[in-house]
Length: 159
Image 1 (cartoon, helix red, strand yellow):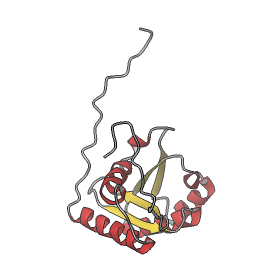
Image 2: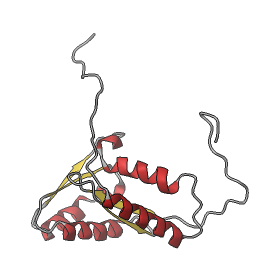
Image 3: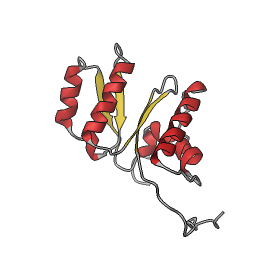
Image 4: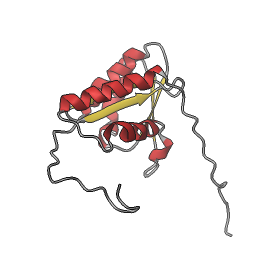
């Protein structure tokens, strides 16, 4: 383990076997996660994933909380998507530098700790397999995140 404040060093034999884009959605009521690995993270990849979300919730109003990633900001694409799904999707954007507002980030942190950190995947297929195993295991015991903020109340006026 590295000393506090130091980065972990990789052995000189370390070989990167490829990367994947993990696209995921969290049902805040159940804690269940829909996720898939993709070779890239393009607008088309995200639309295809959102079609999967639409299929999973065919008769429900769906609120989507997004950060300011470029693929989230194509308003015309999402208006057309929403029109195809009878206006059931409501898109909300987090403020800049406020990823903590989006609960899927809590799940991504768990995924990073349990699947990626200190791991050595031998191939993209191995990484995908471990990711699918993690998602499956998570969904078997999923519960909503108990998400709260216990900070100081906002101050108004000059102090």
